[in-house]
Structure formats: structure tokens, C-alpha cells
Image (cartoon, rainbow, N blue to C red; front, side, top):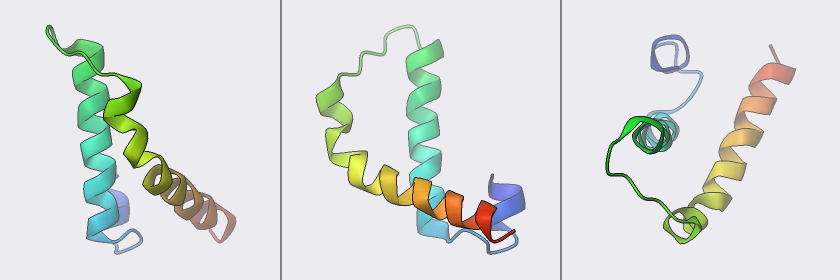
Length: 63
């Protein structure tokens, strides 16, 4: 994502940072030995995640 969308300025750095943090948490929950996430850990991220999804949808539609 960073290479293709960040380097070409298709997605802004703050949006890439958000994606990278979510991806890191997902990776940790899948492969980490001692990770334990609950819905409450991520509930506050839902609005920003929905905004990120709309951004990606717009990129696809306008490609």
C-alpha cells in the first residue's frame, strides 16, 4: 500500500499511518502469541475506518 499509493501521493501520509496501524494490530492478533484485543479496543476507530473505506472506494471508482 505504501509503495504504490503513498509514494505516488494517491493516499495522504496520515491515512497511510492509520492503515499501517490497523494492519499491524491485525497481524499481531493473527500471529502474536500473547495478543488479546476486544471490540472496545477498536470501537473508537470505526468512524475513521469507514472514512478510509470510502477513500479507497473513490480511488477505485475514479481509476
